Length: 243
Image 1 (cartoon, rainbow, N blue to C red):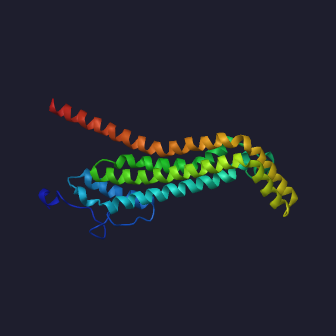
Image 2: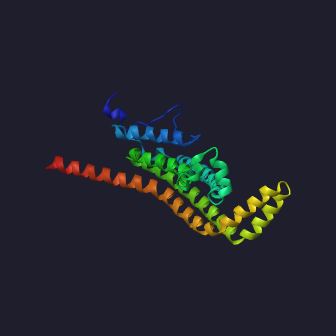
Image 3: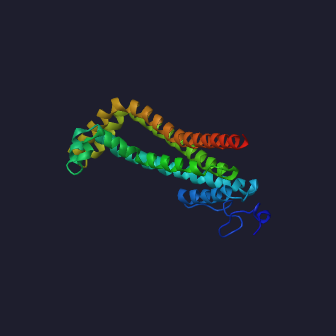
């Protein structure tokens, strides 16, 4: 195959519209598609700019949104489990009998942040593939979808924590009374746990906003800074060879 025959080659898998209409099952599939684009753009092949259609960009946006939703849900569920542990000595000691690390608030926070840390690392990994027109559009669409999902999730969690703070006594009494009918000791424990959490809810709410802001910003900053660095290296190399 000659160079002229490969200039406008399009990467395809099993169909001619791969990457434009394919619905990805998960973020790994989306990253794999971006890797295929990057392989082509690193070589002598040129992918036509219109190859990645609006439908294709929406597919990357959707997988990013879905990944952010799952990431936020796992974080919220872990938060719902960890917050009571951190503000109830009885619950913490009960869990610590089987898991001694439960006594460490640092470990509990790191455990809560684990899904976000993994997702940020995975998204930042994309920086090595944001090299051409198509890969840049695909990566940015994925990250924007994730960004919107995390913003929505952060607002929901923030509002819920503020509501729990403002109506702490009502929620504690109602939930404690309902559970006390099943088991008096357990109901009393839940009541005291919710009451003890009140003074920490406001700072936790704003801390959550800061965490999600970092989770949104870090992949963008990592990818864009790496892209700027590569652009600088390329221009420096071009000037070197021209001298």
